[in-house]
Length: 127
Image 1 (cartoon, rainbow, N blue to C red):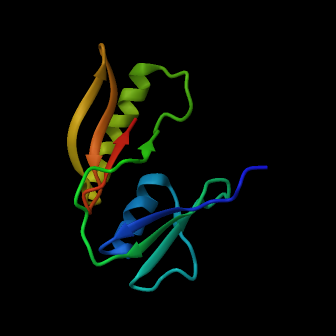
Image 2: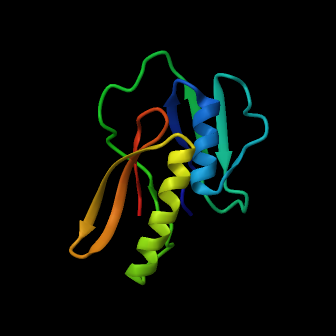
């Protein structure tokens, strides 16, 4: 049996990041984690891991060493045309929620993923 774990994230504004990532991942805020200095989101079906956000005094200073890939097309194998359509549908939704587009990455003629920054500048990809 695997060890139960939660992804912990530093944040300047935990509630804002929790709201953003809940939208990005289809998660919901976890009850009991609604203080200004902490927030947590969970998979509403209970199958995914929790993600917590804790207020820290320092800001982000370097590139992430680890990041989330938002896999909008689900597990492969994929119809690459449909996958690209789903990526292009998700990106503007996340921009409206505070994300920034950095660049598109292509695998030959196919859209591979879009590199983005969350509202606090953390890198992630929509794939």
